[in-house]
Length: 310
Image (cartoon, rainbow, N blue to C red; front, side, top):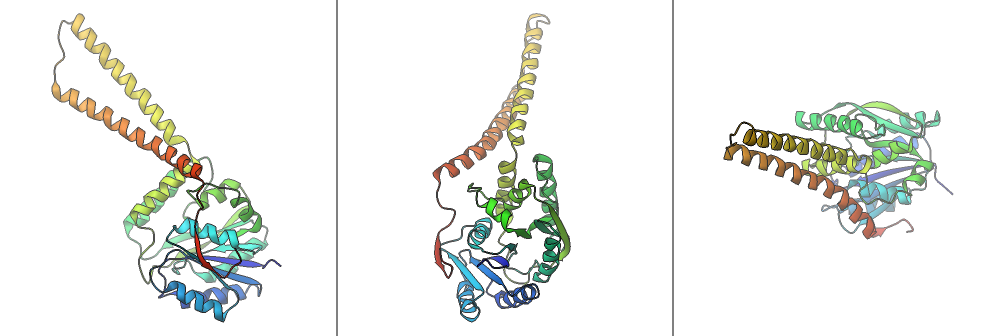
C-alpha cells in the first residue's frame, strides 16, 4: 500500500541538527497525514549522522534510510530518495534546516488545489554573503536566458511533487543530474509558496564555489545548446576579422607599397585567437564529457546499507 506522503532528506555531516530536523519534520508531516515516510539519504557523511539516523529508525518505523558507500553528491542523493519513495506526494528538503519543514503543510495545501509541482520560492536569504546572493541570482537569470525551459527564479530543490512527476524523473537516465531543470522541462502545472530562508546554524555548506560552478555547468549543458552556438558564432566573427586583416595587408603591400610591421600586434592577435580556440574546445569538451559519462552506464550511486527493500 502506497503511503500518502514521502519526505526525502539528503544528509551530509548534519549530526548537530538531526534531532531537531526529525522533530520538526515529524510535527509538520503529522499535521497533514499519519501515512508518511521520512527517507534520509546519507551521502557519505564523515561524522555520526548515519548512526543517529539508524537510531531514529529503531524508534520510529516511518524513518527510512539509504546509506551511500561514499559521497555521490546532493542531486544523486535526492535521486536515490526518489527511486525508493512510495508516497503519492513527495517533498524534497535539505537537511540543514535552512528550508523550514513548517512550510510543508502550506505546500501540501497548494498541491491539493490541483498543482503537480509546488516550489518553495525564497524571498530572502539570511546569513549569506553578498557574493553568494549575487552569483545565485545571476545563475538563475542566465540559465533562464540560455535555456528554452521556464525554470522558476530564486527556487532551489525544496519542493513538493506529484507521484507522476517522480515516475517521469525515473525515465531520465542522464548521469549529470539537474533535477530542478528536469522537473521544469516536464511542464506540469505548478505553483509556489514564498518563505524566508534561514541561515545555516551548524557545519559548512555542501555547495562551495567549485561545486556551484559545476552545478551551473550541468544546468546549462544539460538544457541548452546555446554555448555551442556561441562557439560557432565566435569562430565566424574571428574568421571574418582575420579575412579583413588579410585583405588590408595585401592592399597595403601591393597598392600602398608599404609593409605592415609590428610584433606586438601579431602576438596579441595570436593570443586572442588561441584563447578563443581553447575556450571553444573547453565548451565542446563539456558536452563530449557528458556523452562519455552517460555512455559508460555506471550506476548513479552504490548503496552500502538501507532499511528499505532494494
